[in-house]
Length: 393
Image (cartoon, rainbow, N blue to C red; front, side, top):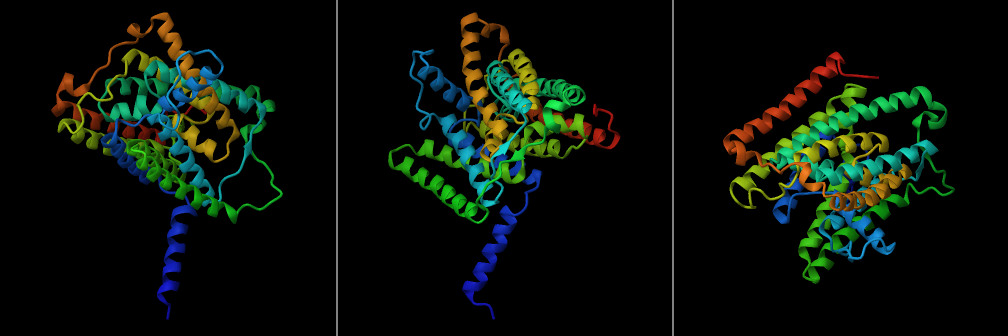
């Protein structure tokens, strides 16, 4: 007979294998991300990512003497802390699943990471948000700018994919087929990686209590929520780029379904929060529709070149992808630079007004319309998956 201790060991091994030996379904990742995003919304404000990059870039310019105002400390800035949580959560997940490795790429891939990161940073500045704050969260909290960015992302992905096709035909000798390489190691880290992952997750949880001890519970909570998102995104390979790229590239609609399911869950939760005044109805609605459309276009091209969006750049860089590390730095530098350019040129008034769907259409119309648009997206993607009418490869 199995002892209680032996049985517990077996259960823990089975739970570990289920969690870290194979990837989670995309739809599960989408639902979990929606739930965590709703927690962030109730805890503080709607989830965003670009602002964290901006904080890092602001510090770079401050250190270089290009900015006079001292930015908020990265470990105090709410969006920076959330991003750090995503990064270290994904790193812990990669270690626990023995998937961390420093991955090198051909030189042209680094150039694409640099250009792609710059385009994403600029696009996020124009749209007042990235693929998370400008599209996912914006759509979920009923900001019309989110739909404008959704269109821009689709068009940008289409253009970016055309470039990649051209590159395959004309620059294949430089890209080496676009394959990344794992840096060889003299030591086998496969056994120690899970231990490091456990300590990293434990450190993230301990950090929450550390923040709370200094009356910074809100900041500590955002770090913890970011940690959870990093784990979920890594384990489910949840990636917004795939939702906009695959319909044109392979026809696969799985990530479209996952993002749509996630948005429906998040949107219904956000409607409860806003309609019932748990948070102010127009909280987080600041996306200019013209800027969102133009910014989405730039961002869409950039994420195809970089191979990651604002959120997936974080978790894929944490997994060891050196190209995405370059994209992360480029994003952080170009985003505040574009904000400064917008301010210096007086462009902001021309980017369009923010619009809150329920204020224009009422909640009774906005909510079913929100669902209908997402279902239409899924139906078109499913039709294309079967007919391959939109595939350009």
